Image (cartoon, rainbow, N blue to C red):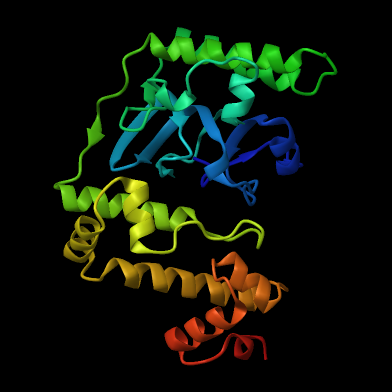
Length: 290
């Protein structure tokens, strides 16, 4: 969702989010760079009014008016603005923040966040007004010194979740034509979601076709056949091209050492990265810094 929206609070502090496990902000049409954060870390709830095309896993849906979206960091998602006049609210939170001392089942088992479920809900005016009030209360509360504010914010999130559970999810999804198209879309989305690399201390997690197949719960041969059928290129070629592209960007646009770039891209030793880069590009990494 954040590809198209920014916070009105421009001092969006991701370190604060990681420390507390929660952040809520108002969203509006993007006119500046979006706040940077790692989507793999956080669950997300958005209340948006406007016209958008939402892509979630292997499905897409066009939405007009007010809608509620539940983002799972384990499933690729993005949005496209059809109408630039968009507004609403968004909150990010970790599973640990929402559960806190509660020993209930994982949020992944929730009907709203469970992989394979539909995470989009169209709202009527009454529902929109009620959920808007909850977001506004969270925005106000997150900046107070109230000692139990985290508990209060968790209650607001749970109210939104329970309100959504009473609704029927949108069924206006566009399904992919066949299984190969579906699995290829999931693979390409997972591949792209790993970038850009933000820290050498958080290296590339999925680096091989086997890694992606395991993450998608399919056999690697099935993944390879599907990707080649739809794109005409093997899975390994897509992975190699994207890693090489990121390596060039890091070499040309950051002051990271070559060793840090190597580690960030998942290479155990810089020499492995040097050999890989030369094999892919015909030149050594240092040449891009001359």
